[in-house]
Length: 281
Image 1: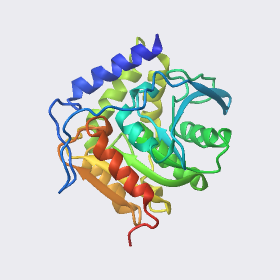
Image 2 (image 1 turned 90 degrees about the vertical axis):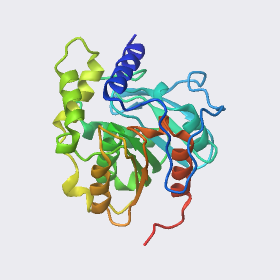
Image 3 (image 1 turned 120 degrees about the vertical axis):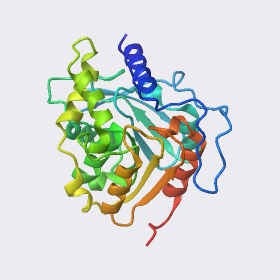
Image 4 (image 1 turned 60 degrees about the horizontal axis):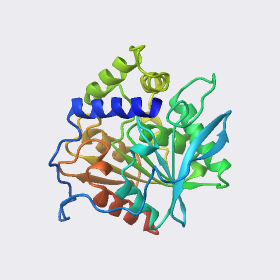
C-alpha cells in the first residue's frame, strides 16, 4: 500500500539523516523545554477523508477545528498521517485547519500533467478555491515550504499569513548537499513508488525562488532548528534577510521538521504569529 511504503521510506530518511534524534529538547531562548508527549484531541486516522477536484485530480484532505482557515502543506515523502497530532490539535483550537495529500501521494489522485513545484503551488491555490476560500493562512514544512514560496509568489492574493518551516529556496545549495543527495537517490531508484520519485524529480528540477523573495509583501515567519542537517538554519536566515519585515524563529537543538520534535513550542509560536495584528517594523 502506498501510504505504508511512503511512511516507511520517510522513516528511513529521518533515521539515516539523524534528524529525529531521541532526547532533543527545543526552546526559543527563555522558553520552556519539551517535556514529553501531550494527549491530543485530534486523531488524524479517525477523521474522515474528503476529496476536492483540483486541476484535474482529486486531492484528499481532512479538516479540524473552526475559525480562520489554515492550510498545512506537507513535505517530501510525507502524507496527511505524518502530521504531529499534538501540533495540529494546538492549531485547531484557534483555526480551521486543513491538511491534504499532494497529487500522486497518499489518498490523492494523479494525472499526466507535469509534476513540478509550480504545479503543486497551483494545486494549493486551487484547493483553496474548491473549499470556498479566496485566501488562507498557510504553513509549509520542508518541501511544503518550497511549494508555499511558489504559492505566495504566483498567487499572493491567496495567502494571508505564511509560515515557512525548515525552508530552503533551492535544493542545489552548498548547505543542502545532503538533501540533494537524498532526492537524487530517490529519483534514480525505480523501486520507489511513482509519487515519491515524482516529488524528488520536481525538487531537483525546481529553479528556486531566491530572485523573487524580495518581492514578497505578505506577512511571513520562518521557523528553523539549529540541528537541522537537511535545510540548515543559515538558509532560513538568508531567506529572512530577503523578505522585508519577516519573522525568524530559531529553536535550539531541534532537527528538520521540528513540529514533530517540539509540537507545543511550534504550535505556540505559530499561534502568536498568526494572531498578531501587524508585522513588526
